[in-house]
Amino acid sequence: MEYMDLLSRLGVSSAHPGGFQATQRLLEKALKPGDLHILEVGCGTGKTACYLRSQGYRVTALDQHPVMLEKAKQRAEKEGWTDIEWVQGSVEELPFEEGTFDAVYAESVTIFTDVPKSLSEYYRVLKPGGRLLDRELVLYTPIPDSIYNEIKDYFKFDKILSLDEWMPLFDQTGFSCDRPSFDSFSSHERAIDPTEIQDLDISALFDMEVVEGIVKYSDLMLAQEQYFRVCDFVAEKS
Image 1 (tube, rainbow, N blue to C red):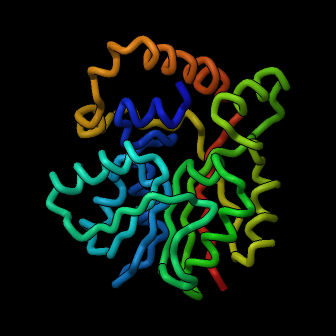
Image 2: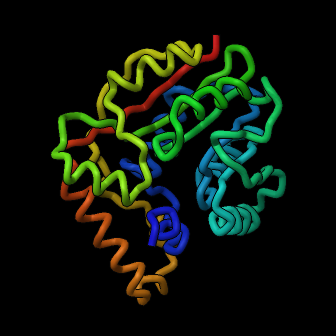
């Protein structure tokens, strides 16, 4: 079972390091207040999109996985949000006009794509002065080739970029981006949000393919976390 299929089967709402509390911190730190139109790419089960809507923003949310989008729509309906625009599509070929959005929001999404291509698409759909907020995995220290290749194969990464490799890509795209600090890959808060447990499809744990997928993830990432860090990139379209 591929990683994205595993997440969709479980209904995981905040799969990135730090969980939803890290999401809230990044939004509070870097999202300008006001009447903004925000695009969330890789929206998953819609938790962040619904939160953004609850804060008064106009929200468009995109994901290429139909199961994720269906779960997101169900969440929005349950929470009473009827005006979020849900779009199935590719991050590398965003189906929006140039200069549409005030902000683009991504978490552990860009790394799964052709990074320069996705950054160019984010830049294209942003208005002048618009911001990209992107929380991504970075390679912190050299990793043995055998482990590195296995991780890339499982997660379908082309490459896990170091911070020194990420930064020039923002510059080359046209973004202004300050160098971020490192967060620990293991910085999941110990106080788990009860709603994240409620979101999980517990019945999936009776599926041996799902269980094997969870074990595989633990072996590949949690056991190798010393090689990774996470960075909050805040980039502005000049």
